[in-house]
Amino acid sequence: MKKISKKMVPICAALLGIQIVLGGCAKNSTDIQTAKVNAGQAAETEVKTTAEETTSGEITTAEETSEAVEAAAKENMGEKEPETEENEETKSKTEKESETEESTEPKSEPEPDTESGSSATVLFAGDICLEEDGFVLDHYDEVGQNLEACMSPYLLSRMHEADIFMLNHEYTISGRGSKLNKYYTFRANPSRMEILKQMGVDIVSLANNHIYDYGYDAFVDTLALLDENGIRHVGGGMDSEQAEKVEYYEINGIKIGFVAASRAEKNIITPQATDTQPGVFWMYDDTRLKEVVREASSQCDFLIAYLHWGTEDSEYFRQYQHNIAEELVECGVSAIIGGHPHVVQGMEFIGDVPILYSLGDFWFNGEDKYSVMVQLTVYKNRACNVEIIPCRQQNYTIQYLETPEEQEKFFRYLTNLSSGVSFG
Image (cartoon, rainbow, N blue to C red; front, side):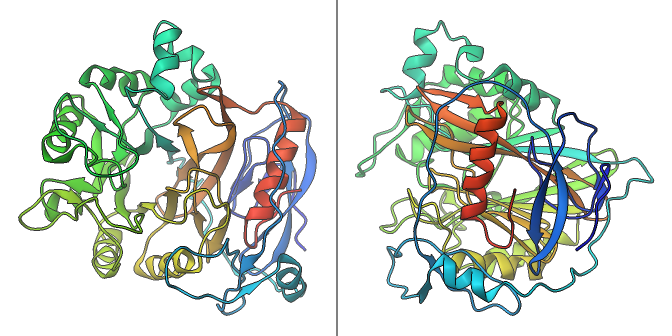
């Protein structure tokens, strides 16, 4: 076990409250206590935690079985019985834990390029849904369209402080179109674009199963409105070239790339973007996604894939997700951010690449559930620090979890869902 000083933390992942850093310096903080983090090949490393204060309720940890992972020297958390035809062997958590008792030394990970002082911060949130017929927009209108009455001021400040802020745009925004033949359809009026601007959104993923809910006209309007308001988008477009396009930013001399793709529907309704039709970037067959990632990784310092995948309402990620993540890591992706299940799922590391399988709903409806914001501090040499900001959606708002008690519950919850990563 490595002994970590109070200012240095050499593993990657982090929490606002628990800060885990890839070979970098953790921020100075008060109320420090020790937690343990297992990353990579189950190596234990001590990290510091900070605590802050407020109040909130309690969410219990699910006690469910998980899937087995047959990857050399690694374990992967599975989830409930899959909805697809894939039959995957399952094991209990106890069985998996017994298999990973024997720790090995961690491999050398790239350290952040702190000497040059150059870094960039990229903040991510999960699913946002602005639907005129209920959900969060009703509350937003009831409070006089005061965004601070819908989101913690602290979270809003983080959105504006980050160099880049990205989320999943889980609705169409238009006054036109007819709803598709599906149970849930989401659409907001064009005037609601002001909400994204107030939040400081820089880029959105359109690779999801609701962006085409009102057909061609509404989809075209959504693309146009995002462009008019200076909000970039990935994962959807007027053709495959636009949907598969990687968006690049250069921040402090660091070139960062973004790509998004979707594999979210059992009964596929949302169209695939092709040479001749608009739609989203599919990854039901991930061959093309791997090609895009391989090419883009050679064109930038840090490449992020935002993926719409997994099983709705399941807290456990699937074997196929882990397999795709492994393949994308081999192709050169630097980090993977996930969404679609509407609940927080666990995280793991494949090599030194953080995989956050689902951030959960960010500002979607009135359900009481955990959510996560993730900030990556990236460096030119592909290293990164990862900060997980624990949140909670409730009463049509999204709130930051501040008290030591609520953060402790959250960390315990996240540990139970994660593979090879534990907090506390």
